Image (cartoon, rainbow over all chains, first blue to last red; front, side):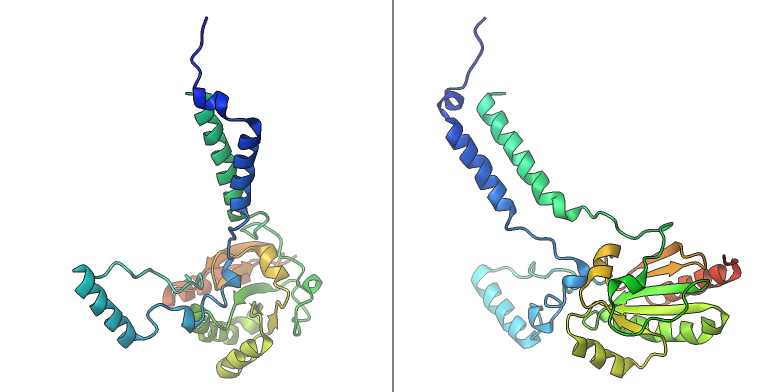
Length: 83
Length: 172
């Protein structure tokens, strides 16, 4: 009985498959989980996007003028994992 | 499904699982566990001499954490009220820089012992999920209650209830 085979499968050599797996595995090395007690730098005031209300207001105004839309750029929490 | 697609799907699944691996915490301190031996973690500062037979509030905090700042006056009040009845509060700072901790304590002025987990080994072993996190440990050394974060009066009310309950219970 003849089974269906995809020409793409047959044309994909083992080396290419291995390369794909290695590439996916390497991509995993770029990820890290920052634990709550390691967030000292993230909790610094300098890391807050809205630390300067006047600057944020100006940026919002420019954004609104260009895009005819506003908002949608805030996130909850200060990054320190508190509460 | 063709073999080519199934291979990519399988490889992607393996990669996703590897990505998620650090998310899963192993060995976190939870209700029912024994309190870790604090002396074995080389903490900076002086630990209370006697923890055996006492109700212990083990609190992990940092100078950069806003809710920790709110929790300190509440813990000071708890210490004033329950220390003589058998409560010991041990506050463990996870600050990377000692001067940050010292600046915070200079401002707060608390009477309970504070130590620093400079190597962050104790906090890693307990694997807290928020800052601050506190563990209420009964007289037998067993973790009975865990508080993730500090939620003002709500947390303080629970502290009172739980501490009273644990103080009533017998020791070893």
